[in-house]
Length: 340
Image 1 (cartoon, rainbow, N blue to C red):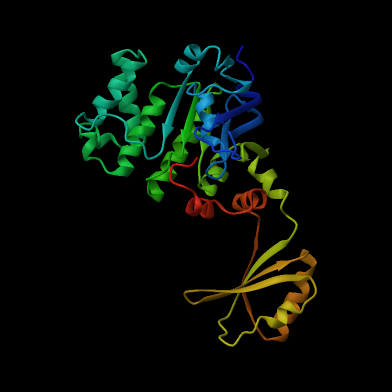
Image 2: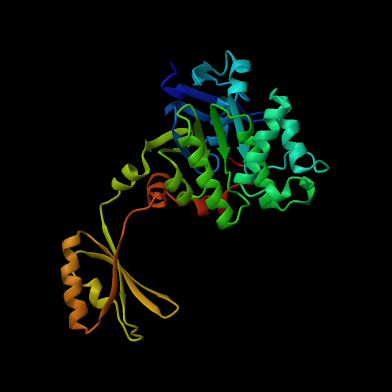
C-alpha cells in the first residue's frame, strides 16, 4: 500500500554559517525554521515566496542536494538525509531557464542520453521520447540540435526530460520561465493531466506567476524568512481576505466625471477612475456590499448609465501581499541577483 504522503517535513531547519563575519555581525543565517509540511500523493502542491524566503533551500534538502541542520524530511516515504540513494531514483527536477544537455546533440539524442543515466531500456526510452515530444509540440524538432532551439523550445525539452523517468515526485522550479502565453498554457495542461492520470504521482511547483499557481495547484504554501506563513487551497486562502467588497462599474464615457462625490458616501473606502481604450470604469472598495445601493443612487443622481458591473474577488496575489507585505513583482525588482 502506498504511503499517504509524498513529502513530509517535521521541524525542518537549516542554518548557514557565515564566513568572514566581523565582530558584532551575525555569525549565521537561518534559512529554514521549524518547517512542518505534508504533501499528499496525487497532489499538485505550490510553494510561493519572495527571493530569499527559503524555497531553494527547502527544495535542495528534499532533492538530497543539501542536509538539514535540524528536523527531518521524507520523500516518497524515505528519509532524504539518511537514505539519499534510495530517494534519487524516485524523483526528478525541472528548473526554468536552465541550459541542460549538450548543444551539439539533437533533442532526441539529449533525451535518450539522459534516460540512460536512469537505466531506462533503450526501446522504452525511445517510445517515451516520441510520446512526450508530441504532447509538448516538439515532434518536428526531434532531430534539431538543441543549440539551435529558441529559449522557449529548450525549456520544453527540459520539461520533457523531467517527465522521462516517470518519477513518483517531480519538483518543478519556475517551469514556464521563457515560454510564451500559449506554450505556458499547454505546459500547465500537460502537468495537470500527468498528475491526474496516476494517484502515485506528485508535483511540487515553485512559481512567481500567481495565476499559474491559482490555476494549477491543489494547495499552496506561502513561505517567507524561512517559515511557512500559510498553507491551504487557493480558494480558502482568498476567502480569508474577503473583508472588503470590490466592484468595478463600467459607465458611459464622461470626461467631466468627478469622483469626489462618491468618496463622501459612508462605507466607500476608495474609488478609482480607470480608462482603457474607449472604456471608462470606476473601481469601488466598499466596507460591505450593502453600500452598493447608495453608489447606485449617486450614479442615477449624476445621470450616469451603467454599462457593466463586476465584483472582483480577492486574488492569490492579494493574499501574498497581505502575508509578505509586498507583491512578487516588487520582490523581483528589489532582489539581489542569485537570491532565492
